[in-house]
Image (tube, rainbow, N blue to C red; front, top):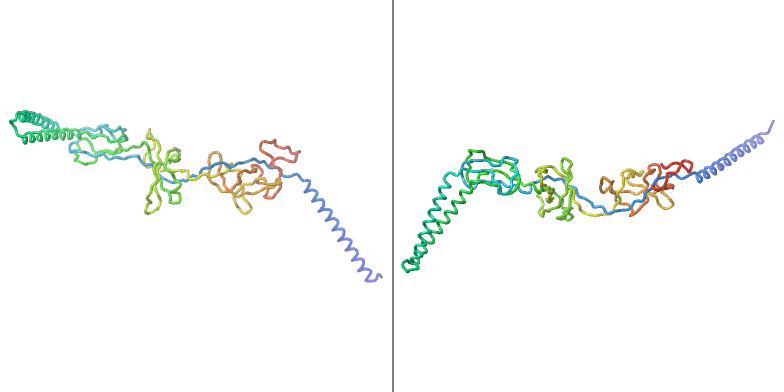
Amino acid sequence: MLRPWIITLAIVVGVAIWMLAGQLYQSKSDTTSALDAKTAPLPRVRTSVSSAAPMTNRLVLQGRTVAERTVQVSAETAGLVEAIAAERGATVEAGDLIVRLAKEGREAQLLEARSLRETRKVEYEAIKRLKASGYQAETELARARAALDGAEAAVELATLELSRIHIRAPIAGIINTRNVEIGDFVDRGNPVATVVDLDPIRIVGQVSERYLGQVDVGALGEVRLVDDRVVQGRVSYVGKVAANTTRTFPVEIEIPNPDGLIIEGLTAELSLPVTEVRAHRLPPSVLTLSDAGELGVKAIGEDTTVIFYPVTVLGDSPQGIWLGGLPEQLQLLTIGHEFVQAGQRVQPVPEQASVPSPADGGPVH
């Protein structure tokens, strides 16, 4: 029988040989993996050079359309409504007739005043001649002059009273309301109609004190109406007194409206320029998320290493979105950025270059 120590020695030698063989195999595997990693082709990504450009930050406010002027037309004399010359919705020019009242006794009063004026004129001329001949005192001439002046004033008043039966539009615009009908009696001061001037139309919004100093009169603004129409106009007014409840200041934009298609009371969105910054305008497809969930883009750094840049979305346009927080110029990953990580080396392919074939190392992601 074999001695126990011989059996133990054999077991130890066997285990040592097994462990040595495993280490040699692992070392060979590691060496093979390292060689494979060095010889494996780098992933190809499509790139494009992006440069920053001026971008105007815009302040967006909610507002509404307001007529340039709204005038309530009132009667300046009393009388019965005899004729209606302008219906609601009619367009009128300044001076156009809206309502005519009955003349009643106004023409007779004017004739009477004119007759009295002629009488006073004859009397004055007679006394004037007698005064020149020394037969009348200066006081009589002065009294005759005063009587003539009073008669002329009476003619003017009677003429004015007769003209007041014609109630006319004080401004050009649209008849928004009419308060009387034929046969109605109106007294002096009673409202007859309302004329609204819609050209230009004003868009009124409220701006907070934070941005008040950045809104300038004369700046070009955009207005989006409730029906998605977009119109442009100039800032015509910036308020200097804040509203007590909201602590905001009124701001107005004037929009040309010669055809009157923009009416009063519409909801509108004002877009006003406030500051100018430099930013990159890029397609939304280049955006990606970091492992921490941060929004950004990927670009090529030194040694063709991928770099992740966090971004701030400053605005959008039909041509792309404006992004801030980026260098003045960068080589941006446009295709394939979803398949590579920050810090990974890649093989960039400019957008102008031809697409490599699989035989050259695989397609661009």
